[in-house]
Length: 320
Image (cartoon, rainbow, N blue to C red; front, side, top):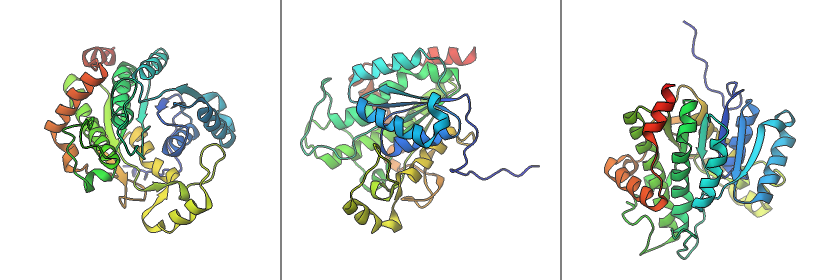
């Protein structure tokens, strides 16, 4: 029997002919995930809310991967805006099958005071959670056509601060940090719940949760238009070298969760040393594995987004 080859994040399997959508692809983890996917032969839809930043990111990716120019497309998508989500989903849905969806975009540094979106939702929850819930639901049939996979971006913070999002929109008692952690609890819980529901409905799409560890800009290669940390940021981040890694390496885990055929739905992936290291199968925090919390959050997202995932339709598509 041939020995299974170890996963090498710097030499991915051939992804020629496959297509992936990455949210928040204009910088950080989303950019490097896009670059890694394109480098392995995939077609990538890079999405973001700023046209100028998207253009700069696409230009950088093409400079670094000249042979990939015709496999990189950009699409405006603001996950805090449900109208923008619907428009982007309609565009991608018209392209046919989609092999993977990386739900990466998000607010990492929340506002000090509670802010609402045009849809009336708290901005951190809207950006990190609701927009991705709506997008994944809208693209479910496209994923089913390719027996695809969706990856939700988790966080180490959910193991350290066990905030139960009983008030996910933080109508009262808002703090920026709580908004961030609660959004990550919700993201991971929804990712695991999505896989349970997909299996139950017989939909040939898997849902995985992955986190990038402690990935910082100061330890990330400088790329014009994508990552230009100051000298102070470089200095401060390099002082933490023992517990940090670059965003380029942080993207390794996200990409493996998205494309490795050995990854199963419902799994949780992160760096081997938690904060840094090569991709490793782990265990999600207890609060994110609670089905009651997940069911409650699913109902909240359905009500707030107006989106009901088309499980029955997707199951029929997969059987064709």
